Image (cartoon, rainbow, N blue to C red; front, side, top):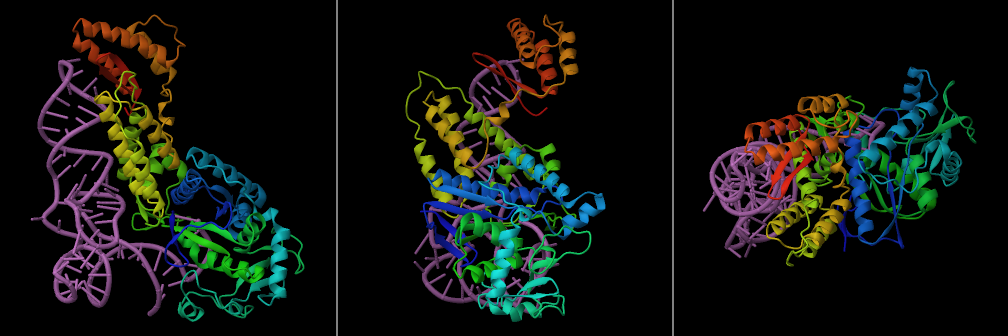
Length: 477
RNA sequence: GGCGACGUGGCCAAGAGGUUAAGGCGGGGGUCUGCAAAACCCCUAUUCACCGGUUCGAAUCCGGUCGUCGCCUCCA
């Protein structure tokens, strides 16, 4: 039985999906800038949750939106002198590229706010009819006072929130916390026709409309960063439940902790951020995933080069274990299933990825030890690969041919006067060098043999002399 | 002002009344090796911010103190 911490109840609950298919909705990005590590963290976490649910036999309908129209997109597009649609399109493409690199599985559908205008208008109209919304000069606001449940997700009430000093008073609104459902467009802004004149959707309503359209009145899981709890998700609940009359709108609310940079939250608005592409220049996708999953999803994590770098070495360990040779004559004795069970136990408890990761490392050690003791490790390797895959770690990805420039390769060929074409691939060149070195070692010319080894080391190729010969692998220079 | 989270070894990070206080990285020692590399083995927190309390028993529960962070405004 999977147990999930539900933000709504503030406790762990047994996970019992409503129907045969788990209906999962995760708030996507507003595409006006590149993704940063905080986004990566959130989407890695929800991707892992989705993968785990599938691993446990559920079918998951996973919807993730793009809020491709809002103030920031318009501002940004105007600055660049391009249409809002074009700006959004560019960042959406970038988003897909980024997520593919991180091994984040694609959602079932990626609806966009601008393509769901009819559904949004339908909802706004319905809310007005039911007395939950009102129009003022082409703007439509949600009437928070009409919803007695308002505040139930974030654990606040209207009075407490009014006591906060940062709410702007707007005379057009009946209540300072009433929020915009539909916004009259200013000249030059993108706009769509509506019963209240030309305008565009406000923030929040698009998620309600899209989740209703693609998943129905009740979702099993709705996810996002903790910064979305209020007002975004609070408002979504208000709109959706008031419109459909069906409660709950969401059965399990899942929120991930936020990424810190130094002492503060990483955020686009403060400019305090490490972009994902920056991080990917220095660290592998596996290391970033392992880093995120090494702490619990509800805890905040702080960016540090030291942590990421140590994850890189951890990944190498797992990768090596999964690539350990299988010996045919091996004896039985390694029980991989118990590791699988431990993994499930960890993940069942509110997606305990830190413990799950620990199981992976334990299993890796068991495989290495089994290899040393000449045991059957094939099954264990399969389990390690399988479990790593549930966490989205791609342990085969690291086996790529090293990226060595043709100049560097030519230099090697020249230096050692190798009998090979200058356009040869990396592998045959290394093979020749290993042959050369093997002879040197037979002649006990350790010095020359070591020169070859260090030359290759500089290119990021590590040699390992084993009893039955030398193997090479791509490692850090 | 209101709401919430957190403080565990050199670093990262689990654990939520009785466990030898996971795991990773780093460090030390050893096995293997011509030397390395990798792997394996051993060691590296008598103690969980601090002070009280509850309990036979607390890192875990309660109260207080200090410190850090998040939300209440756009945010994953």
